[in-house]
Image (cartoon, rainbow, N blue to C red):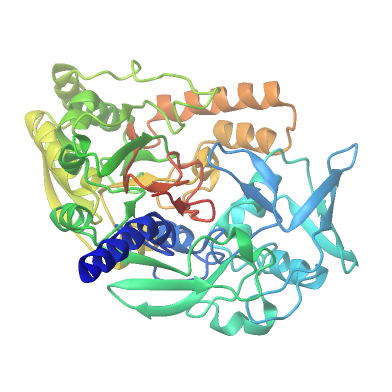
Length: 497
């Protein structure tokens, strides 16, 4: 009897400890579609870099939350001059980088200095074009001077492109980034994963919920689903495979999260090349594509058709999808009017691996074929896409989702500095006015005018707004549902058993 009694007591103790043991889970595995080419978020436009590093490793003067609000970051507060041209940042004190070196105003001056001016290393220097100078007032105070009022500068400084970096370790930032965030890199296995561990010098260790966070790169949709179902991955903030959601919707172990993104999915038609420099041809292409049909076929119904480069959830959005509605007969008429009664042949470059690009490309190819446009699909890897269409402007048609927030200004970069090849002086004037406008109602009016211009011009072939489709273990809490910036901010995530 004693043996049985002892066994029962042991069993009771085990059961009593079970919830505590479950609560003690301190690792998290995050699935991602793409692998970052570098770990320096300040020098590249690749979203995958921010998805690993933003808030987790690096922090900015300001911080953006899940709702797109601007919060204090490394600056605990700031003051804006009456004319809007001077911003004085009051820095948090007692903060250290992951290597133990102190954070102060010198780091801010160095970091901002890298991304402004003619020698900027930034992958998106246009975000900081209004910053004329940055000066140290004292160790805990920095003053930024603007060349013109800029209603977005505080938001832009809170994105991954504007994070504060460590000058002493800048030569290794791409492989061994040292930031002030709660985590630091422990291991990187190219093609497979990046593992983060606790930053031992983080200012608030009790706020760090995980000992390790692994970002695992899985590009195949079937493999994504299998990894989640097997418990090998705890959360896919953006699973990128809408067809996979059905496997999780009726399984209590998981929660499907459908949120918003800033991702305008567009098909660029190279304005530098014939026949895409002809507005009639661009109009024909737009009339040839059923945008809702594209969303249904390529995205399983997830996504919102758009007629311009702006997020539908933004209060300033204008629905211009009716400007060039789906009308194959009108498309054929326009092609004939442009001198292509029998259509033409072209190439269509598709980056990997998301459904919107590869599967969406196939759907668009079929729509174009119906009006006489023979588009040869050319699937490429990301490195090829960046070097070919994006940097080398070498393409006829290509498709990509632009996930940067409020980035309509990219159409003002001109044919020499951006891959669209678009150039319109009237649009550029609106963007110039927008950059110097701080009043919200006036900014909204400028945004509306800018949307109208590029929609009428078909600066791109506007397709749909990309949704944020996430799947998580039902016990993982605090993961962003929406994606106001390029980020997988896991600083608020935790296990709840």
